[in-house]
Amino acid sequence: MKPAERAKSLEVLQLELEPVNNQARRAFARLRQNLVQRRRTHLGHRRAIIQGIPGFWAKAIVNHPEMLAMISDEDEDLLSYMIDLEVEEIRHPIHCCKIMLFFRNNPYFRNKVIIKEYLINVTGYRASHSTPVQWYQDYEHEAYSRRHHNSSVNFFNWFSDHNFAGSNRIAEIICKDLWLNPLRYHMRMQVPGQGTERAGEQLRK
Image (cartoon, rainbow, N blue to C red; front, side):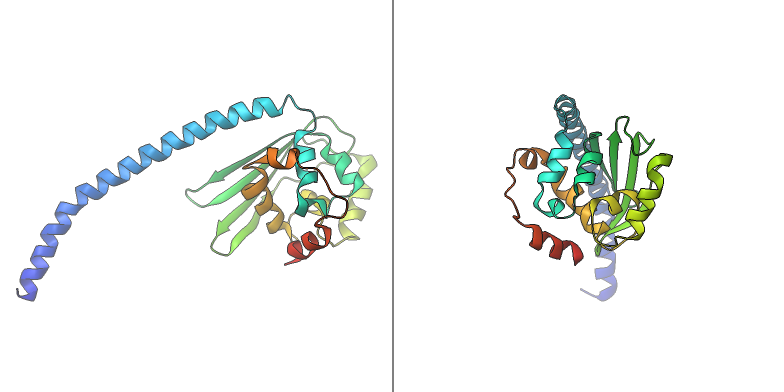
């Protein structure tokens, strides 16, 4: 077969393939929508159950072996006011992960919700947006001091300003691990000193 004839055959085949491709795209979109709806339903049920367990998310976060290494007693008190945590992954028009932390009235800040967003690409997570924390006047100076006199990777620094080394890893832990199965960590028994050194090393990478 001559090159011109091959090109013509290829053109005919491509025309036949187009409706098949369109059909596949529509089928995939329907399947994805169905799965998203099913997941949303289950997550709604999970949220309702969790909200009936006081301190659920605080305990799950503190019990995570990597998070444990960077949480102080004051961080634990701050976390005790958190009533819910949600993660939303958005793929279009850009792939990003939105972390939403919900709080009841507390002595630290006015915000009811803190939102932190990260862009996701082949290199990992990259901070893109964080809700400014509205500290109460009595705590504002201490919050400033903690941020600027402690450059180590810790939950407070991530919570109040995620533009520091280690922030991306914390977001990845929450989005890919804690959010998927928080019960595993909520039920986990802490072992004194377990994983502390290793967690610090991993978060500094």
